[in-house]
Amino acid sequence: MSAIINNTNPNNASPGGAIKAAPLAFRLRVPIHTTIYLLGFFAPWDYLLHWDSIRTWQLLAAWPARTGWIGFSAATITVLLIGILCALTAALLRTWASAYIGASIVLSTALHGDSVVAAGPFRYLRNPLYLGTILHTLALALLMPPSGAVFTIASISLFQLFLISREEAFLTLHLGEPYRLYCASVPRLLPAFTPRVPASTLRPHWPAAILGEAYFWGAAISFAALGWRYNAFLITQGIIVSVGVSLIARVFIPKR
Image (cartoon, rainbow, N blue to C red; front, side, top):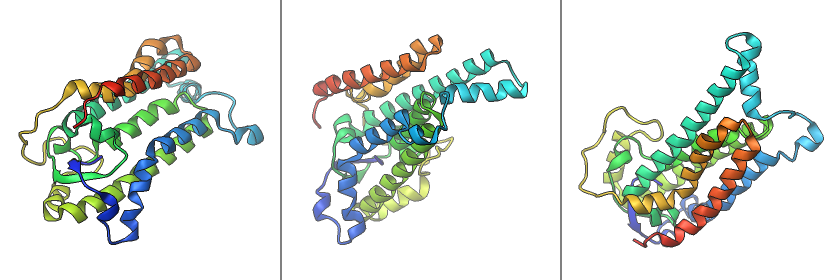
């Protein structure tokens, strides 16, 4: 989601086929993400190709150990810390964005946008939610077989870029010059070091945002609490539990 609030009807908004395709992608984005992640974890192609014998976490730890840079134990801890950092940053960034844009808007299957919201992380980059998803994917990839990790990172990243391009085309059509000026000032995915637009008066809604991003917090906690067992399967179980918790948490999110 970009820096937008309020609902419009995207199906009636576009004169061109490219933007008309966006609502379908948004409606299906959760099952598409889920399918990509499942393919990454199971890597069904490996039953024929036999590429993967270890998990990506082990592969990344073994490489610097073999070169003699650091020992295998230190390399394993380093990779774990990178995973925790990616998962935690993803949860923080997505929650910060959701607090300003609205958890119910983030979870919606429709495109939204009647006005630009330049508040919170949206003052530093236009698409903090998509960046959060990419960082979360980097953490999950550590638990996958290497070929599954490469497939997942590439697929999720490309899908985020597709969603961004369709959403920004939709917003440009609806909001016109104010949104074009916002895009000219604020970077798309790589955050600026300083705010690029003045702060708005919009107030964040933290409880709803935390509930809406419960899955990402559960994944971060799973890495931080269970990672020290050095058991990818155990962390994966924690992430599966996080999915269930997030579905329950969504019931308590107020509608905006």
